[in-house]
Length: 107
Image (cartoon, rainbow, N blue to C red; front, side, top):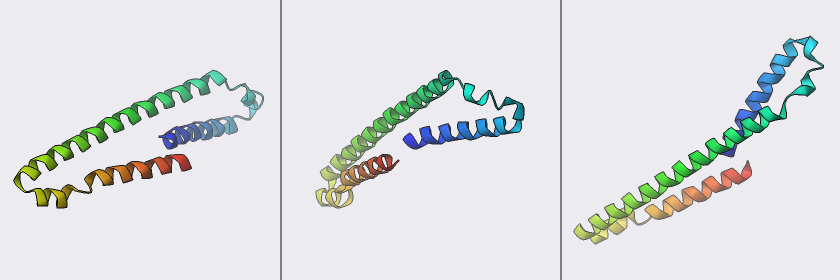
């Protein structure tokens, strides 16, 4: 999520530098970039990041709940098969979340 924020900020900065490089008469105006603009962009990026995180967490919870329901239904029919097929399902979710957290910390 932070990667999206960083990428958007880099794109904005690169495009601004290209525009200012084209117009040599605006060299004096380069330092007059309004901080309000960057603040608003940053806050929008943050809100998008928060919304994506919330939706992702909801989807994770829903998927885990569905998997547990399937495991319960299958265990009623054949408990050995349910343990073999879905035993490490929750562990996979936990491992994936852990790996996502590590990638977020690296950024």
